[in-house]
Image (cartoon, rainbow, N blue to C red; front, side):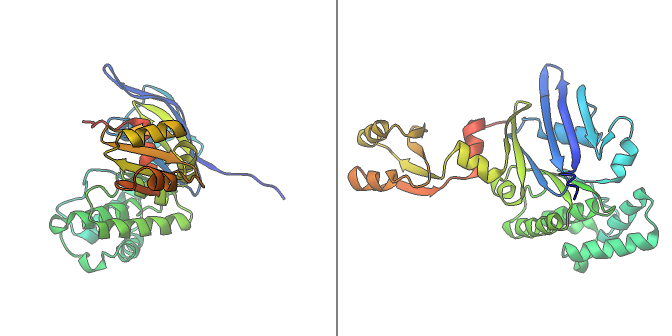
Length: 308
């Protein structure tokens, strides 16, 4: 029996893009396999959106190789665009059309027949719980409804690759949960997804693999849970207002500590009993033990300073 192995949907090699003196993307290389959700994470200004825009031909790259579906993006861009769906950060819905007509009209760009476009619109309206708003003008929709419609529109052409740029930014928890459920369903159906997000919970929940990018470089790549275990640990001990006794105890234990001044973060491996010993022998007040998270890894790699 032949095992062909994973199918590469997207291959980026040494992508570079500069805006004047600013090197927005500085040698990014990664691959996305068929059927997986691949995350592209990073702080503001890390190069995520520029990378995404290069992937669908909106922003020309300065150098590097980019192939989608084993097609060259420079030579086969028209064919590639027919096979991808894009949900951008910005609202690009037609304000003069109803919810349904935004879907039907967009389908026409892909030469989908009017009858098939109507059927597809009905399927997507139901999938994203929008059927009750089908005839409403998009101007009156809430932010959450517009994001659901944007995502529905990105699926009109039944794409082989769905590109999502910050799909749940600004949504309330209910809307975010609904979109997460729908994206998980799409992944189960075999759709390949490329996702950028600032929500670490979103990335941990949806992504099979991810990269964390900063200053145009990839800092780390892999499975979210595995990366957290390898780079942070099993759990994190948070200590508020640490005194000299606490600091001396941790120094004697040679712990992995992030010192934030008025707060210490101690990274612990599975089975480490340091929390029990600290709270019994030194101080119990202000000590909290919690599971290590993707956010811990993100902040450890990219820093805690604010980005503009």
